[in-house]
Amino acid sequence: MSNQKISFYDESLNILFTSELASNEEKSILKVNSNEKDIAIIASNDFSFYKFDLPTTSQRNLKKVIPFILSEEILGEVEDYFWIQANQSEIVGIIEHQKIKEIKEKLDPSVNKLIPIQALSSSVENLLVILGDKAFISLQGNWFWFADKKSILNTLALTLKKYAINKLNVWSSDKKLNLPNLDIDTEEKYFSSTKDLLKEFSQILDIKNSMNFFSKEYEQKIEWRSIFLRYKFYGYSTLAFFGIFLLSAIIQFSYLNVSNNLLKNKIIDTFKEKFPAETLESDLISQVNGLINQGQIDYSALNAVSIISDAVSNSENIVLVSISYERSRFIIEVQTNSYDQLQEYVDLVNSMGLNVNLGASRRVNNFIQGEISIDAF
Image 1 (cartoon, one colour):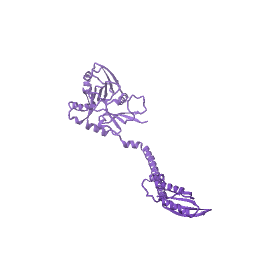
Image 2: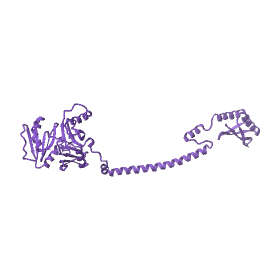
Image 3: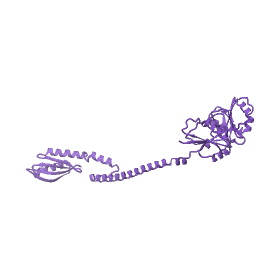
Image 4: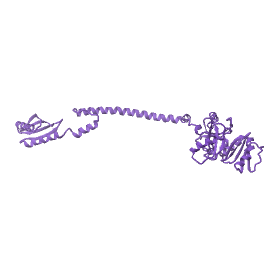
């Protein structure tokens, strides 16, 4: 369970009160996101607010219109001020760039929301809060103002009349507070201390819909280093897992690469042994498939078979015993009655266009069996 801090600061950035909201605290009416960092609520008159009659147009056009309108209200150059619009309403809040830079530098980096106390949205509308010699008034959707108590009380009647306020809630730790005569209903609530006042005030806030000045160029950046340090154990574990996986993959790849080279060399040696007359090409698989399909027997070899068959048919007393094919030549064995008949067969095949050589011959019973070599090409 993680806690989110909401701290109230004075103008010197001294902490007035800190409240913690547990992420599982479902009963709290504080509308905050438990994934966000800490929130700083500052009681300072460095923030000013204006209510303009803005034209109905896109936000893109308003970004051009608002600086022009502000330039007619403020002293100095509008470029020296940082401004934001309250939830796309007609309220515009401003602060000098130099002031917000100083605040950001002094606050803890864990703070990612900076909200002026007078601009807080809450469940109580039209609220006047007295904080010692300071005070702020929040007329929801109409006016925000933080100043010294005397200035606010002296102009209170005119302010309420200007915005047609019918009821005002007043919170104070000063039980001797003298309010001016007001022609409206007032509901006064007194606390024993400023701390108790802020404690109860923190319970009615709607942080989500309040004006956060840590936006645009002052938005807190993601601190990757702190995130890494928080989850470094899981990060190191993940890196170790992938390291082991990568090392295992490298070892397997190396082993497969060595095995592949050995197999490749063995295939090449086998190819050279089986096809010594062939030149090894780059696509070994296609070359071997072609040689197997061809079987090294083309039309010339088939023609030689036809000639051998015809010669046997045309020769008397010639019996074909066997025929085999080896390295572009046929080896046949024939059986005749005499050596002369064997020679006649050889002469006949020669006359038919083949190159014939008579090999070894022997007598088998009353016949002569001879071996004949015939080139197929």
